Length: 545
Image (tube, rainbow, N blue to C red; front, top):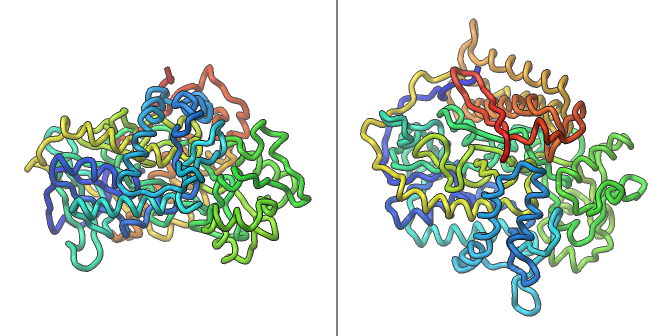
């Protein structure tokens, strides 16, 4: 049973704004900045402003900026990576508007690495047939973008509330989104549970990687936006397509939480994946070898691990030389050395780990969800751009482009915050925070890179068992607190992922069913759209045109 709302104390304070933006990654920051001319904007973020996924982005931002590249070339590569499930209109918007959006980002102060002639230095990554990836600081692109946008946010005078966990949506008498409830911690700002009334609500809450034991996502990525949207009655789509980054530093059995990512750009520079014997295995699996789309590389790694019985494979970049490592990958080099591995002298042990959710809250091309007044952009959204598998470095671009498109739509759609907006009632039971590790174990064992009917059925049963432990007969309900709210959100998202993964009986993109190893366009060239009604999930099968 999934709760309709999170159990929480009645709001003890109220604020009003024209637009409330939830999240401070690239999507949330750009949305807030672009909405500022239309009225008052309040940005709320779960931790510190720069604590989300954007600052960790190493690979870069993709756009057709080179003279020998075109939006159509970028479109073709994106559609190929998406394995037949991309919304082509959404992809075309991304690739045609992307170059100018990147230039506007540069005008805001973002400084990208330059080539000898002064132009933007462009690299190539997996799935791309052109060099179109712009980097900053070698492997610190996200940190530079975040820095530039936060400086612009400060200059714009946009109000910010940090350490704020969004709980649920406020609705007016017509059912339109009219604000949020949230819990705030920290000095110098309103504390405890409060309500923000707003004419428009923008979800930019990022990913859901913490639903798995090992992930590249930061601790704040607990799927809060997707869970809120489901409770509010919004549609979500493509949740079965969770992308596992192929090369995350292996820290040994039992490692949990956020793991150091070894950027795809390292393979773009020429590093090779090898097994214990030093043999390369990707050239036999794909014509792009180590630069194949991420799902192909992740599957290749998992298959080789099964064949050899080893707990990891190795990324060999010794031949790149010290100058390349120090210039292009200083952050990665430092992270490896921090864990006792020197990439200049030895191969780096790597495994796949949960990285990016291609699905999320379903939106149109202007960020509108199926709940009027509620918008979504960035990783929390499902625009249809990524299909079954995100093309490398399209994520920052999607957050940038669709945040701008969303901001253009809001003035025409927005309404003043209704005085009849009410907090949700009938709060559901909360999971015990101690269930978080159990959720992660269930998802990693049964709904990770390798999936099958038996494992997914086990996952569904065990998740249902956990929900029955949340204050059932004879049990005291879990007290409202950040840990319980996050754990309940993780459980909601995990249940939705498993439901979609059970339904899709084929292998496509980042969804790999061992019992259905082939792609089936006749039955499954379709989007799985999920809604929550009366505590139960329903999933519709909608063909892709």
